Image 1 (cartoon, helix red, strand yellow):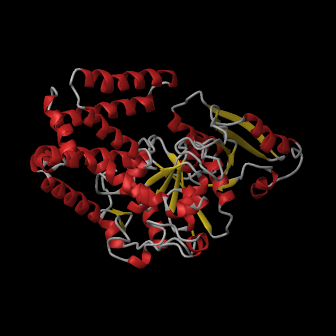
Image 2 (image 1 turned 45 degrees about the horizontal axis):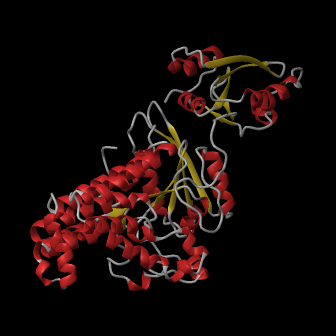
Length: 483
């Protein structure tokens, strides 16, 4: 590691060298007291020059005739959380993060925060609606997000560790946990995985998720959310919160299966205590399995149906395409419309949804391209998928729906059983940062079922959170080595 020297000009050259003499890096010679000369370096696009004048230059102007030592300089600086460093690389990293660096003919330099990043102000959460409770959401500024979380979780036990990750393009991260509640080894594992990311350009927040989820596929093992009150609740339950500069979403780990059926609003209403979660589990299974069950009935058990239902389903053979192909085509068409609704401008969403609805309802049924039963089944699928709270679950639902439907087409209910067994075994093998994914259902621990299917009393939830059984060996085995 290269360190600063006692030569001022050499220090300036060492810090400026990686920027290839860019015009963005500004250099300002200043006088500190009557004897010390210094050079102030900063990136013009990332700092507020008014802060530089207010925090540093104006106080120094008043002390030009006084004799100051290097150690006294930090007492002169009015704000900006000044600290000293001896590392050239640290000076470079701090410049990239909107800090200013004050160099001297000394082996240490002072760093001050005068950043001026353009971000949204605190507003309502963008990724999740708020039924009751606070309506503030996280932003792209990590300092604002930390301020919000400090506000929601006011405890001296809240531990925050900040560090930089990446090579040429670094991002600042903050890992939050609660001392005495979160497993210390779990916190160490999360930090280890984040610092093990070898990406040279850390400009995509998904790298954080990939490193924390580790090995495995299909089911999400971390949760992204922009509600600070939900983050505070997660901290109280022993989970870890990861904030990344530039991202308005906090990453929660570990996140196991039942966590995705919880919602912050469950703790803010009586309906969330008894009715909401069981219905979400039911909706999840209906949305996933109903196309496969319908295909199995049509292919192998049509004669066993009641007469009126038999007459309706028998008409599927009058359409232009087989029933399974109909379902598959409409599912893909609906997925196209859903994806388009997320990406298109607001004024174009109405036109796309109108055309899609007209295509798969009136026109398609009039020309016998689709059977009305197909439209009903797909409608039930997507209506029951709407209550799924976290969008990361929609991808597994889509994949499972297609897989089970194809197995049902060839093998009937036997195929559904085989596909379900495969999905169950895959989920049972997964872990989220060393915590079994199906816990507490597998391993079977009914005494830990509180706050899973039903929410107990709020005092019990807060005072007796479910312990997350972290396993170091399982966590090491689940690490990814190619991030």
